[in-house]
Image (cartoon, rainbow, N blue to C red; front, side, top):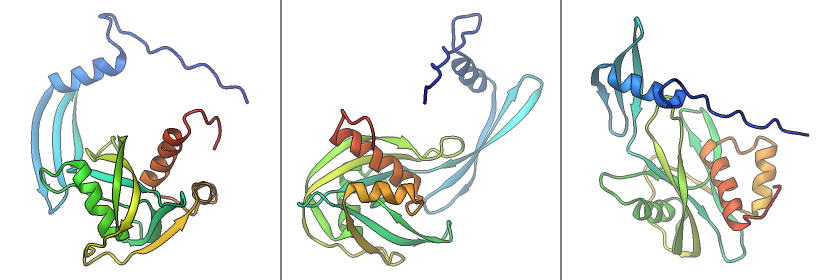
Length: 205
């Protein structure tokens, strides 16, 4: 299957791209910004701005950020977790992950979450970049790590986390994505990013 070449970004009269012009317009015409709600983890910020003759209100979920870990054991298998997710109303299969504590470095959070969710510590933690979870309305940025050199070192889990641990090859995880058995976005993104790091010359998965 042939892919169409990407179109070049369109410039407006002053040399800016359309996305840059939109950014500047919204920032320059901000009328109000207020915190409407603050919970234990997330907050809801309302930003009012003028766009032409219209007034717009952006609803932005503020999130402190999180970490996602790809744990790899001595046999090269991945450790995934299976847990109940109330918001999704389903049991999901995911990479270990968790929210950053206030002022907590991402690497520290990754090691902590790895022990809490899998019961393993890691000798090596490799940063693999990161990604926004839902940038259309949420500030959450997820820091991705690979974890190697695993050894048993459990920490007490959160009281609302009853987790089943799965060990499987990367190829099996990709098959589970294909079959719809893995539906969690951060897990899908993390596994593909890990594969690109592990085998940067791969042309298929």
